[in-house]
Image 1 (spheres, rainbow, N blue to C red):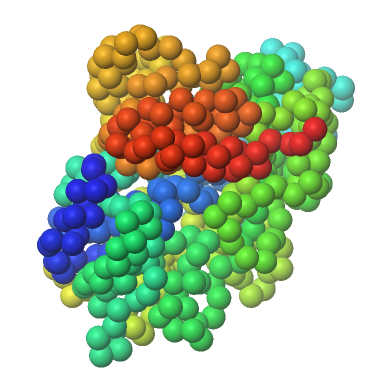
Image 2 (image 1 turned 180 degrees about the vertical axis):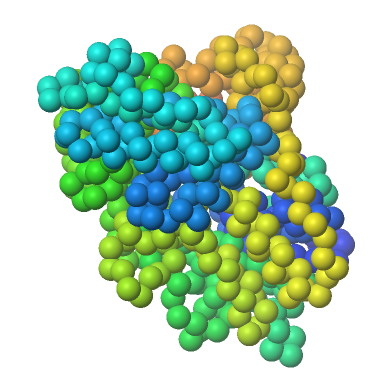
Length: 520
């Protein structure tokens, strides 16, 4: 995946694409894979980096949604549980079984979640990850020794799945290329092209080379998540707004706050949300909040009251109370919730997806969540095929092994998340003059991963590498700043950039990363 070669290809080979997909997050990448795997000529364009927005800022869970079951949305739960199982099969190197414990501090919680989670197991059917069980107080504390013991009556253990969101996004990008599709980052769609009132393509600007393209397509798909409305208003300024953005914040703590393999799920916080404390990459992620915001942003920032909310609730359930100085990183993501006229509370808006076809032929897919990305993509291409006037072809993605597929990966392998690509990374590591040292003692990453990201994963900036190709920014924001310069130098060597580029990248990344830790 050489971006420069792809740009040259666009300049020299003006083809008519079957589908141009705008947006390189979970929905856009999934839709592009769906189209390309059916044999359609597919081009995906992303204004920044793949998964820059919401898709790299999730709670890192592939789940059916226990809370939706309690809300009575059985159809969404059924769909999500099926998709969870399929994703576990199609990307086993990234999607892992994760046990969750619901602590029981009130007499009514135990019976409700004991019965409710048995229904959850039943709905998962053959794609289930393990049965739920009631636990005594002693059994609960044995699994989570730092759980607050006062007034604890016991708990319920159940199973969902965990993943690395931006790593899955990159595997989807690679899968797109494996099926002869093309995806390009830092390519911003600035306008929609029309012929006789119907969408005929897009105008796009290469943000690296300042080239402008007019690209033709039989159908254009808007899969831009939180920026859905801006694309629809390019089509028709009078289009009503679909998205009601809501911010979710997470804090990252050292694993000493919650040792062991199980996650905690608190069914109801003060604002009515579910709270998770989940082991991830030898850290603990605590989240999330639900704060309505006025407008979407590529780089949202946590509000002071959101961080305080998470610290307060973490202290309520853990014996070791986290303080602001314990937070290794804090990150915010914006949910692209589809507006519900009857609901002012974003936490009650459905996470189901919506598919809209405008009179111009613009196809928009909005809402949803990572777990159901594949089903969203399948529905989108089914409809977009008719808009494009193309022959219908059956979907194959329910059993499509994603790039990197490796069933029995080794948890002790430092390159486990790369699946079948791990061999290539080991080869790069063996070629390094200084062996394969970690870039930082507090982070698990090596020079080989930086080189691989630049060569094979279309990483273009230090941020791309430290925020999304690796997760250094989320695991320890301060430590990530300390390795920004060596990462920039490795990338410059691979991408033929000069010393000034290195300096600029370090400065830019440092300024960005400062927003991910709490000021003293």
